[in-house]
Image 1: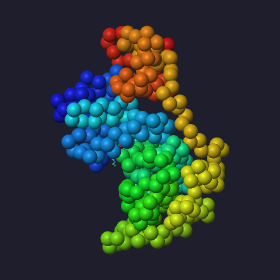
Image 2 (image 1 turned 90 degrees about the vertical axis):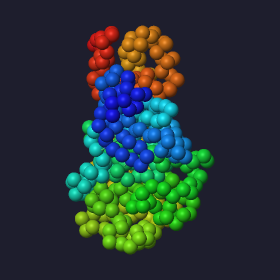
Image 3 (image 1 turned 180 degrees about the vertical axis):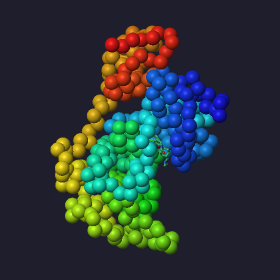
Image 4 (image 1 turned 30 degrees about the vertical axis):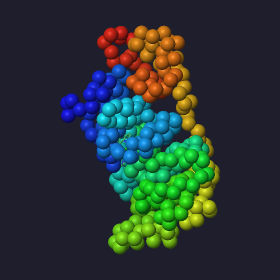
Length: 345
Ligand SMILES: CN(C)C[C@H]1CC[C@H](N2C(=O)N(C)Cc3cnc4ccc(-c5cc(Cl)c(O)c(Cl)c5)nc4c32)CC1
């Protein structure tokens, strides 16, 4: 609608809805100052109710997780009636659709994708987070065919760090680890490794290892707790080995994500080990980009840095981060503005 979300009007041009998720709508939009496309997750506070705190924990998680395979958050607007999370737009759609459209992937392509997902999840785990809802619907492709992890609504940073147990069973059944269904205390990172196993199975086989096709209610849970799944004959020995390691019923015997980074299946035919460290320095200072913003806002470089270094995730932060992305893509042109057409060399 024309007059909806006045809080966004002067800064973003709202475009079509790109998805619906639980209590959120996701809209495509354009950040007016830079012309960059963004995804805006819009949540109505009245609808959120007690989930508001979970949303705020997702936002805090996203802000601190700057990684090449995790959607980046640019701005957060907490208005009277809504919360808006302005994020990196992924134009390649969901990994789920990619798998369905390709039936199943070759071992080499599955490996390439799995290494990216593993990099993101190892980064989460080594930063004390667990995702807890890993599935192809929550993995998107950007326009360079790179994978981006999203939907941290269930992401947890348990108070005592990753070693304490979490007790709320959550996420989607097909990807849920046995211990979640048994209602016992579980480790988020170990449950994530199980979900990674289900994900890798989906990449390699174009199907789910545990699915509820033709079963009576409660049958799916039994299948997962039994932990037995069909191994198509085209699976290589090493594929079966890594799947078996991740889909172990007892979480204590499952490898950690860091163990998996060095697994033979993950590293074979690849020259470089999987780097899970972020390639971006969190909150890095780039003088060229800062200068562009300083000029636009009539600030000195020093004033602009002071304005930025509070990392308020306001429009200024978004403009800086989006310009930084533009620069990384080698497109640091001038800003879209009539006032001071800035020519950059
Ligand atoms: C299945 N989920 C519960 C919701 C669904 C909503 C649309 C979304 N999407 C799509 O489905 N495209 C096909 C396009 C698309 C493009 N860029 C996106 C960038 C970010 C996000 C995003 C969405 C949510 Cl709900 C988040 O929490 C985060 Cl951290 C990020 N979604 C995007 C997105 C995928 C997920």
